[in-house]
Image (cartoon, rainbow, N blue to C red; front, side, top):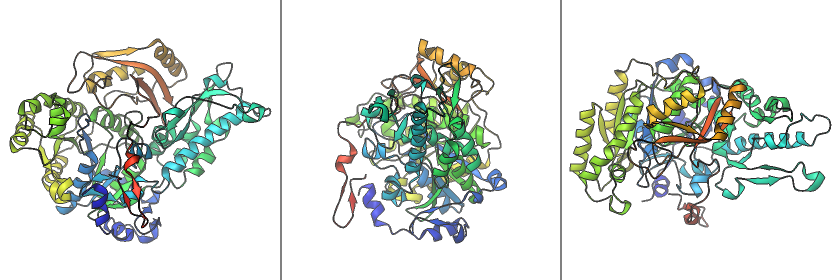
Length: 555
């Protein structure tokens, strides 16, 4: 069965019964039908947060063969519940861009899914819409000010960096010229669109602690310069109050359930290759307030999502995971070992051995933070016993616990071995993580530490444009902000063709962006874009709905 067929076979519990597992009173639920609810921020209890066990799930470098990170996150939480632990999974919301583009649905897979799967993948509770509207309100206010005769701030249209956004892959909107309707159409200028997941408003929502914090961060957004070179911020347009009002419901995490009826909190959805790639601080802290184990994920591999989870999110929130699970598949490791996609189901111990350095690199990256690692091998029917034994032996040599995860086929039952090893690892961890860099380090030093320590690069090369931008941001007082790398997810390097564990490479920074509201500097490596395009055959071509309202093709 496809993932959507599995999800449609399960009758969901009423959301009040799911909430009862976390001891949330029914009066605290803001219902969105019978199987979804918003949760109020006052459920966060900082004392309980300190006592809870935060488990981060990351992965090896993604390949077309897939790794199944979200499937492992959900299966692990269900597995922990089966062994008697009070657990909740806390993950991101899917973006419509990948759903209709390359990836399809993003709510787990097989018997390790969150439901209602269709709702979660399509609009959900409207959070992405609210984020886009807050983003676009600021864009409208900027253009309105440019043509104002009474409140004009003297903004130079050529310097405005704020773009509009929409939650869809649409490459034709990356770069546009707006305001072409004469005097009534505003001031003509070059601008464009980002995908909603890459909007700074998304980053702000996922890094704020409450409504007051949200409003202040929205006001700190840097939008451009005046003609005389003075920096202009969103607060000067008196925009932050209205933006926060548009986000008043989106700031509340969403409660749903796994296929096994266990609680799942889903909130926020920044991409990890162009943003911080983790769910909100609010959702994570809420999960930690309600459960003894919180299983969360960071997008793509450890070089992107996990690095940002630790150096950006955990730094701001004051959190530290008790264990990090690195997800790998035998198929993907063989791909990193040079085996072609059409032969990955064939046993090949040599290719598997050649692919192991990619796994090793990510293990080393996590260990550089001073955190313990557990390897989860996401199982496929084509995996052979000899291949499984090779991974076990390899991880044993590295001194890292490893478990086969059968969550896709068996749900929580298939993740019990993994659950036991995660608990043992978490219970023995007494250390707090150590960040890759200090905020007091110069921005270029921070970037070099990430590139050398996490990617294994030799160094960093800045374009002339990037050098000028970085000097400008430092002059504006942003030098002490953390770094949010924008880099391909397909390689440890900035060249997506370099699979495995590349060596003797530099990271080339094309340009910089600043997210002063969210609070980080964004170096853009290689050809990364903040508005993706659709593939030649989009996933949308396979999605249908019949006269009874039954949806098919949503993976």
